[in-house]
Length: 231
Image 1: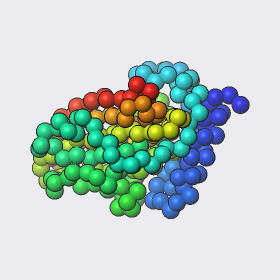
Image 2: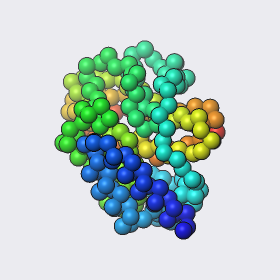
Image 3: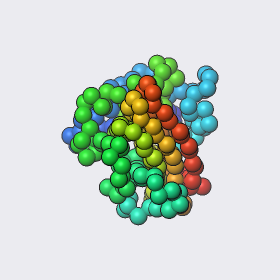
Image 4: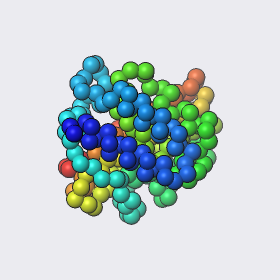
């Protein structure tokens, strides 16, 4: 078996493991797994894909283990230094943390892991992606542990999202955070997207963030990288 075949086998087993628990996203994962098996993983770049800086040969040759559940003691420097007016969401190894700091009523969060996500909201995921060259996004959908939907409505919001990767094992984990942000009409969002890896953590992170900007809404978007040297 080559590395791609081994990797697809890992994806299938992981999707089955995720779907062993009742979850609103089970069918969505299976549909994306089916798509991935049909089209396969990309073998080379064709244009300006989102994954253009990813070494695909290395990506598929790693022997991953299932994402681990880490204790929620990670505290990125950006969170410590973030302006007080920013609300904070922490996503640890692709799953919404129980420890967030949301005080603005204009920010509403739904998640498949806490069973608040509706089918209507789930169907929004992948709706902003193109029909071609989205193999890595399809992979993300098949392996996502938590579908997180954020609605910004009623005015202004300032939000820091920490995508935290934490792994104490000697093996690599593959995290697949998935977030959809809807900015309602006449609403404004200032967003800091921070990707953080705990020291010495071995991980690969395949993130998908979709943002829908409706009429008369506005977005200011910043991205920070504080990745582990082993990522």
